[in-house]
Length: 156
Image 1 (cartoon, one colour):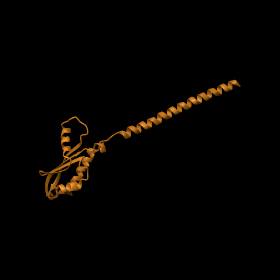
Image 2 (cartoon, helix red, strand yellow):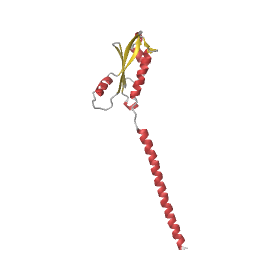
Image 3 (cartoon, one colour):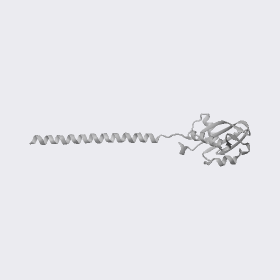
């Protein structure tokens, strides 16, 4: 009779050790899942370049109808009505035939120039300088669009 009781006690100890192993493995699996989710969702993506590219297309559409621009429609009010952004976080300069119109904070252009000179610093704007071929009063011309987007806290 005493031999059977000793065997039962050994079995209870073994079962307890197996439960500790199972709990330890469960903690490792759950911790791994939490770590993967945390790493995936904590990664920051800078979408300002994509936003600037889309904004350049929107500006072209704002001034043109079917790819043709009327030089009389190339006005500051037209640009202001197209863009509904915070003027402190964006700068847009559109140049056409030596006529230039701007929207936003002019200082961002200077920051873009510093960024091109590889000046060290943080929170520089994302800059885009594009040329587009358009037809203005039935004459092919180039339109230059310069966009600087700061929005560090929102898009990064």
